[in-house]
Structure formats: C-alpha cells, structure tokens
Length: 149
Image 1: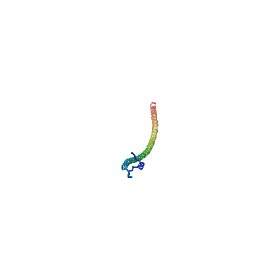
Image 2: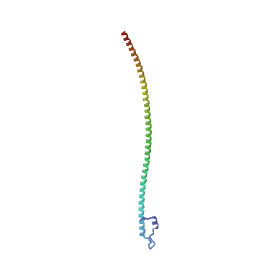
Image 3: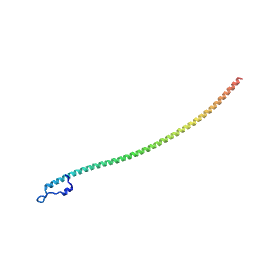
Image 4: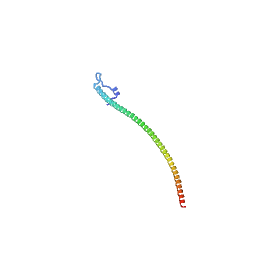
C-alpha cells in the first residue's frame, strides 16, 4: 500500500476511552510509514546510483567525443600536409622533367650542329676527292694519249 503525504496528514486514529489513541492503530500506521520510507530510500538510492552511472557514462562519452574531434582534426591536418607535400613533390618532378627536357633538346641541337658540320666536311672531302680523282684520270688519259701517238 502506497502512502501519500495526504494520507499521512489525514490519518486519524481511534480514540480510547480515556481520550488517548489506540496504540495498535498508531503502531500499524508507523510500520506502514516506515515500510514506505524504506522503499522510498531504497528507490532513491537506486536512482542516485543510476544517475551516477549515467553521469559517468556521459562524461566518458564526452571525453570520447572530444578525443574523436581531436583525432579528426589531426587527420585533417595530416591530410592537408600530405596534399601540400604531394603538390610540392609534383611541382619538383615537373621542374626536373622540364630541366631534363631542356637538356635533351640542347644536347640534340648540339648533336645536330655537329652532324651538320660533319656533313659539310664530308661534302668538302667529296668535292676534293672528286676533283683529285678527275685530275688523276685526266693525267692518266693524257699519258695514255701520249703513249698511243
């Protein structure tokens, strides 16, 4: 039986002949109030314990949330750093490739000049050889013509 504050306020005890109260009624009521009080105290303790557990769990969750936020921020910073480093590295690779390409082109142009010079030299050698050979043939032809006369 649940006892409300109103029940306690309105409780009336039977009177005895000499104007006192019935001790059994008072004892029964006090036992009932004590039982209710024990139940309320136990329930109050359980609720406090549950509140403490919930508060602890909430504090742990808040700590985890803060830790997750810090982890996410750190991951974001690392990602941004990695992206920046990758861009720098890509820029360096492109710059090195451009320099290498310029060297290759310069070497090719140098080789082209060398080959052009060699071709010119070979043409001069050819012209010299042809004129020397023609001169020699003319000399042999004249010698043969003199011998045949």
